[in-house]
Length: 110
Image (cartoon, rainbow, N blue to C red):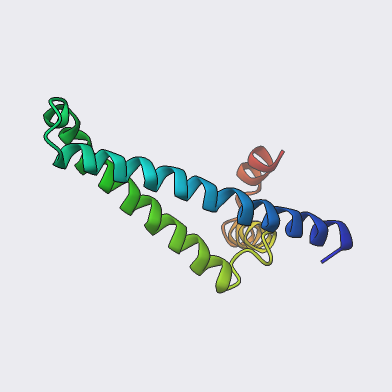
């Protein structure tokens, strides 16, 4: 990894540590306020109740994607992002050589 990409990675990490907790706190505090409103005797409580289930679904789906992102990063899936592209082009070249379909590959690859 070259020096500038390490710097960019560190800056991204610092920004993530600063921004993500603030976003989580803001979203969770608003959701807790919504739950308190629904459970209260406020006249608008019945109107706010419809939003609890979709908000819960959105938060669970987001949590799933965040955990999937961390799992992928922990298993090294972002270390060599050029490899899948090269593998795809190598496989295409081998398939073209087997089928003698050079006209198709030249039209696709330019």
